[in-house]
Image: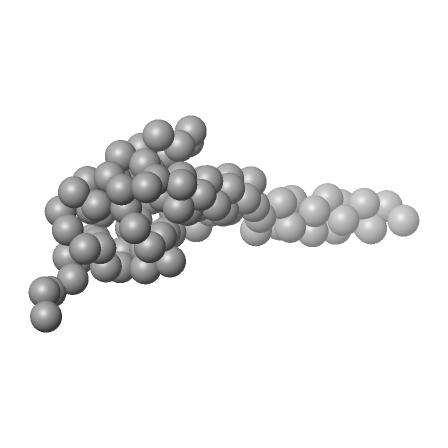
Length: 104
């Protein structure tokens, strides 16, 4: 029994350190926060009448940095998407990789 307690303590410490975020990973809480931000940004973009089809815009969030990708009809819609994303609580920065659709 005396040998078991130190082994359990070491195992528990290793388990906790495996769950801790590193510079390139996120904790469970950060992942949930990013998913919440993504959902809120998608909703904000969908409600913005000046953007058009929100389904053509992909939203991804990593540690509060929102990345927008996809296609919009014009430069104004591109700016509106950035503004809509910045209005969401928790957004640190927006990386706008939206492309303007070529005219046929």
